[in-house]
Length: 427
Ligand code: SPQ
Image (spheres, protein in one colour):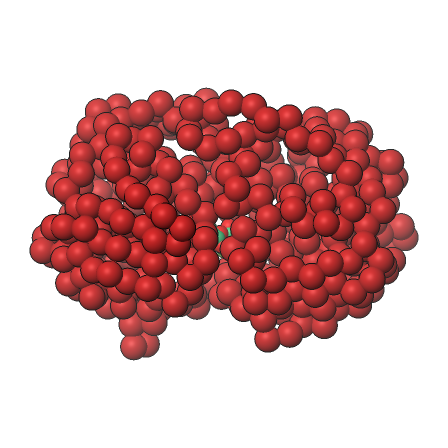
């Protein structure tokens, strides 16, 4: 696909699609809660549709219309054995959280996905689940999908210190803990997105968090809710960066989720000299939202590391592009997790942006980026990774001569099917 190039300004308003992480969880809690759940501003993209498909196969009635998703939920004990293996496509969130949900069910299920998902580590979820008494297996020493969950109704609570900072591992353990007899205690390595914890409370359940310690009791009952999903800050990130680096821009992003476990990109933008204001709004998802107005700015380099990383892990590809337009050397470290996403995002960012003229060195756990550099036309690929594809389109806006061709552009459908249309809507 030929990308949009040579932009001299972007102006207008965008309502970014619903948050992907919250959309997945709203289906899960809706299915596990008694009564009706309605979800507005749900993300109708491939990953979240995989979660809907999986729950329908488990016997949950879910209706999808353009404006609303409705779920007729019951409880953990009402899920039914699926007739076929569950295909979760490209979605790491679906497969890992489903492992926690299915671990406590009295039937066997096989979970599989696409080639990218088959390369992502699953042991991080399986090992603690096994310690709870769950029976799961995977390919190649249990490391990879397809995963078989044999199921048991006798999960026991554990005390677990997480070796990686991962909201998916944490959430899978919480879902298993909700089916165990007694209290499970989880110690996080670093604070990760807390949408699962927020949603337990929203659906009438109880979970306590104190610093990095999480405590959750098994055997809780949830009640169906009306959920409005905030706009996804990870999708907004592409426009935050576009507005900052393309000359003469002013973009308003409305209803963006501002949960502090996700707003690392705003802290980094501020540190780098970004020019934006936030108007805080209200939401009924126990998740803060607001409008962000952002303009072109003169940027300077920064260092991004440590506990900041989980707060912006999915934004690092687009932040790397931002850094190519900042004066000085930006260092991203402590981000080895990037290697086990939809593709190896350290290598993908370095390889593709280098083709376009950026000066980037990949490291074991991050990237070193020298700015400011002009970007030039090239033939690039998304490697089938939505975030790499969207980052390359934003990079292409700066190319003044020639064409930028993107291979596997349809990867954007995983999280933001209207991405190219929304970009075109900015005059
Ligand atoms: O769902 P998936 O494929 O893992 O999606 C990604 C993404 O870029 O959209 C990661 F590739 O987001 C993850 C995120 O990186 C979504 C997520 C969640 O909803 O809990 C948590 C993060 O992953 P992890 O491994 O750090 O827990």
